[in-house]
Image (cartoon, rainbow, N blue to C red; front, side, top):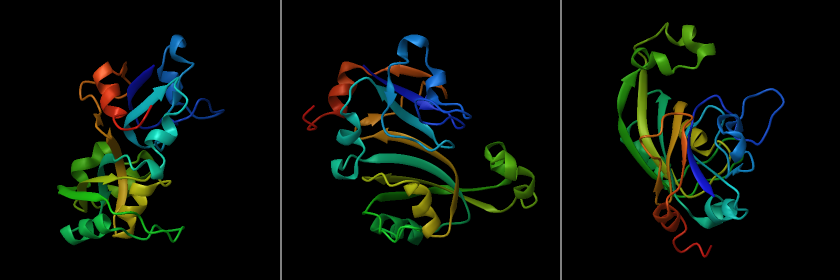
Length: 201
């Protein structure tokens, strides 16, 4: 069985944790044998797969699999088209010295902190709202590797600071737009076939 979940922010991608809520708490008892495929950061939303198939992580998420993962982000700061071109070409990821592989990156538009007030990190809300006109950049980025905090580090390398991040797709599989945060459903046969096309599963 493979299910897709629209993971909400605030949940750890793990089977269990002593202090923090996990995505498993969003599933009923009969699905507790499933495990997450890869991980999304606690504050990241969007497409998460859970399964009882044991070989999905290396097939889909390890860098050598070259499966594209697409994300939408909002970041503090005004990033220009040239910054997106830099991310697409590859940037040095802070803390590792590694240069990211070529990616697809697209500028979606601009907003302001005030317009994004409901999305601000609660702990920083009051401080950030002291300057509600500060620019926010919205964009899309698609990567074929999965280093820790990679999208956040790529955006940071060009001068932005991600505060919302949502995974929209893994390979040919797109997040079902009818799923509200925390909801899930089983993949159809057609979706499974598309997800593993040429993956020799």
